[in-house]
Image (tube, rainbow over all chains, first blue to last red; front, side, top):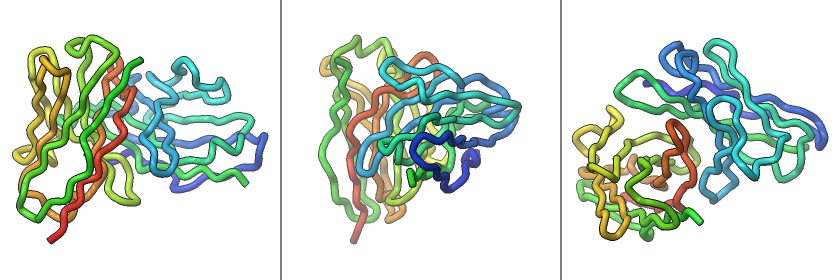
Length: 111
Length: 118
């Protein structure tokens, strides 16, 4: 089971919007609405930001939104803020015996 | 509040085994599956496997089949992950994470650094 493909880095200025893509296959991202997104600051544990493609847990700012089209899921951060600078990972349920797969990770830099 | 507290850092020699614990509190332990995820230094997240704390059933990533064992102790609300035949590539931070129904990980433990070095 290969990792989902994410861009290595994305950057934006405060207030701008950025989008992170997460590309898989019909056996994972494209086959299920079980895509989630995680934010990880250096030295910290990951934090859930989006679940089931587009749902936001309580406490996550509505600047964060998720979507999916075919085999590619996306995380959009609107109104980028300094505290959004972190690594972001997508995850998907899969049809293989390895039940879950993560993305390669994207470093978001706020310029 | 829901909390997962993991055991402390470990240093092991190649070929040895390590057992990491994850103690859950703030919810009904047997009602939620638990996952283990690892992260090598400077690398991404890697899913290792899942355990059902209610019956103890497990499912492991193909990569770790035969080397990983996940168990639980319902009397102490603790899950364990044991990895054997350690090699330097197993140096990583190991996280436990509770499964949200049915497919997300929240919350996460604080992580346990396992260093494999001769």
